Length: 173
Length: 322
Image (cartoon, rainbow over all chains, first blue to last red; front, side, top):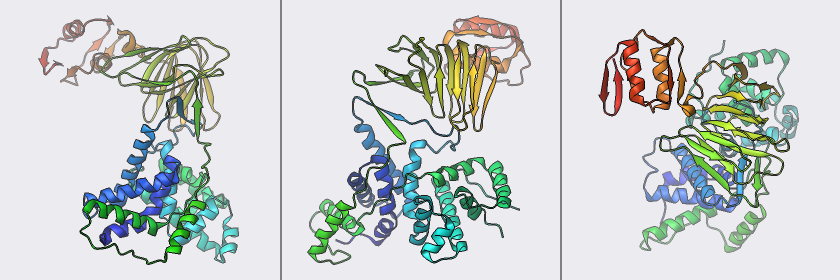
């Protein structure tokens, strides 16, 4: 039985990113894959994937909810989960919760096109300077600058799409 | 042509030139929420990406789907045909690539041996009083939630609050009392005070004793004494003399109004009397100087009626004044 191409396309473009999101949420890589796979199966079962307005946002929401459900039911009895509030006071846009940031970051990285992802990780994970990245990849400084700018633009769109940011038009003189 | 995203990403990576920083400052001023959101994502370094075997996962999904639809479907054609050795290798590789522990710097788990964590919720439209293990008392306003352990740690006492509550904290020099809210940590130095949290701000009013508030952003801190309040919002910590003398009314039922506008009076009363008072004439020009000491709602309304020459009508369980 061959599953529909639309579903498969959604899968190809989102599976890895969703797994990374779920893995951060649940701290369990295998569980993460199970959760994401279940979401796709559910999507197929309910025949929803063709009618969705924003399928990727929907997928992320489903995965998020499943992760939260899992965490709730598995909270061990004698433990108190306390968010480390050593965070910037009032710095967050009000829709973006502290505990959502790390998983969302991983999803965002997973959704970056391969070249951009590579540059992003070299800069933000390995802390390389633009110059070092340029040298390493044999590209121009400007290209690195553009890649990182493109990544930020994608982040902005992602945050807007998921309503973490109000839709804003940035006008600049 | 100016590319703000290029500039911003350079800024967070520390690659901007001095003249470029001016533009960033302008952006930050005009778009503080976006700036902070980008900053958070760009400066987070706990990154650990995992590799997944997509084709194997897709196979799994197809298999499960087939199970659901029964066996009348033709045999599954995998999109990539692979020899069985590869399949085994793929499994071995994915186990080896199992990701390493994500740093749990961001989360702390407290193991509490004799304690279980408790959650108190003031639902049912009523205030709730909670006695804590150390002798402290917390009064939760409606819909507020308090997470607390039945036994505090030996070196500190911590609770988490959503909503509004009044705290009477027992003195314990060895164990500071800390209240966590969405955006602040309030450290208590043996005192009583009111704390009201909303999504965008936290307001604290001190009744007795002292309260220390720390801004975790920039080491700004303030110590509040009785009749002082502080407002923590987007970018600042503001300390002022407590303006609203009725800030405890939700708990005490005691209201004092001095030349207060009718609008204001109704608004404050509604906090205690569950939003049952409706003012149909918002423009009503009437000032009230009265005290209400835990009165029945109908008595309060009678006083207002007489003072402001208004008519009272009961509609759907609400009281309309006009």
